[in-house]
Structures are given as C-alpha cells and as structure tokens.
Picture 1: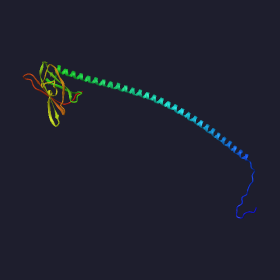
Picture 2: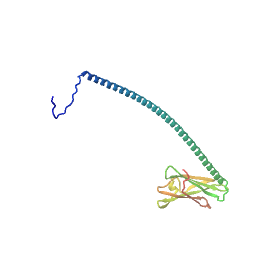
Picture 3: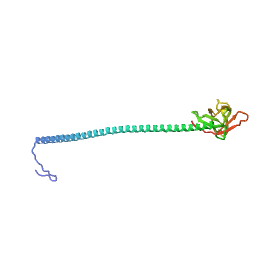
Picture 4: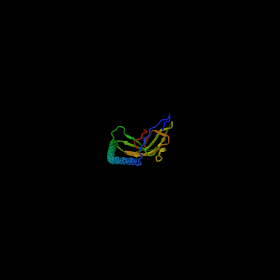
Length: 245
C-alpha cells in the first residue's frame, strides 16, 4: 500500500484473542481485594478489641480510685465533724466554767459588800453618823424608756431607834435643747411626791419609772426630810448611770 504523504504512521501489534485470560485476571484481583479487606478488618477488630479492653480496664481503675477517694472524703468528713463537735464541747465547757467563775466572783464581791454594809450599820465607827442616802441603782428593763430604781437609806448611829420622814426624788435632764425636771411621782404612778420611810437600820425604796419620749436624764436629785423639830434636811445628787440589766 502506498503511503500517504504528510500523515503519521503508527505500528500495529497483533495479539491473540483470549477472553478467559481477562476473566482470570479479574478473579485474581477480586480474591486479592477480598483477602486484603478481610486482613484489614481482622487487624482493625483486634486493635479495636485491645483498645476496648484497655479502655474498660482504665475505666475500672478510675472507678476504683473514685470509690476510694469517696471513702476517704467520707472518713475525713466524719473526723472533721468529730473534731468540730469536740471543739464545740470544749468551748461550751470552757465558757460555762468561765461564766460560773465570774458568777461566783460577783457573788463573793456582793457578799463582801453586804458584810461591810451591815458592819457599818450595826457597828458604826465612822464620823458621819445619822441618816444616810447610801446608794441608788438604776437598771434597764425590756422596754426602752422604762427603768427600775432602787434607793437605799441607812441610819448609822450608836443607839438605833426608829427614824422616819419623807423622800423626794427628782430627775433632771434635757428635752431637746431645754433643761427639764420631773418629779418621781410624774414618772412612777405608784409613788407619791413624798415617799414615806420608817426604819431602824436601813430601808429600800424601789419601783419602776418611765421616761417621756425625747427626755435625756443627766442627774437625779434626792432629798430626805426626817420628821422632828431638830431634824436636818439631807440631800444627795447622783449622775444618771445604769448599774445593771
């Protein structure tokens, strides 16, 4: 055959026609892919099972550690509660002992004071004898403007005889910017203006008074007027001071 000028010529190869060969090659490829997939699956399964076993083991270890930690926390909480309870009991016992000691000391001081007082009344050895305005105590109550008062009158003499007369009590203070004075009878409806007394050794005059709103007491004036022709007026001032309550 004559060649055509100007066109490129390709060499041709003639091979035998074998259709079964291609099928065999394809089957071998399928077997190879199946084997490879099976090996990959088995390897993945073995690795997954090993990982799962490791994870389960680690989980079990963590659970055990968590249980141990919870047990330790519970035990420590119990120990802390016992320590706190013991500390509270010790604190309460210490406070009770302290209060008991303070109460006993206060009682001893009060008894010693009363002994001195009775000795002074029964066996006088002071130069200032006669009727005495001995003491005035003012105490709080639950009401803000209400107070208890206790006035003690004594008679210091060599020969005790009855003394009698009247006591006048006035409260002085400030109501706003103005000075104000109230009689005890204005503040205590149970008392008259002149409180009568009669005793040989001593007498307590007590009661409760209510202060008017806005009144700030500063001083208490007490006047004792004994009965008799030659009796002398006795006066004493006390600053407003709460002695208890």
